[in-house]
Length: 108
Image (cartoon, rainbow, N blue to C red; front, side, top):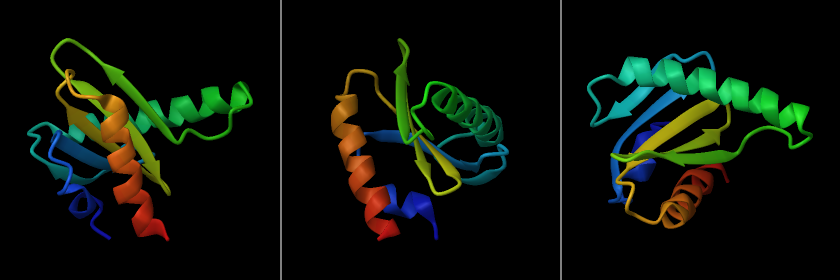
């Protein structure tokens, strides 16, 4: 399955990277430093899963964070990490809903 093909209808996405939990790059769209982002996001997702387990929350489903120049929404899809980058002025909640709809429709 090509995960990024599921996201083509979400116009708010500037670029995106798909990695596995070891940080291996699987797919990328619109990003020149995809391998570095994949490594960082794989590691981050693995650590956030550990934090979630320690707090009794279970495995991470999704997290969002933003900076001055861009925001990132990280979504777990099976054993893959999907990192999508958007302009920080857009509604992250709105993009998260679109991501959930697009990505999890494919799992059914």
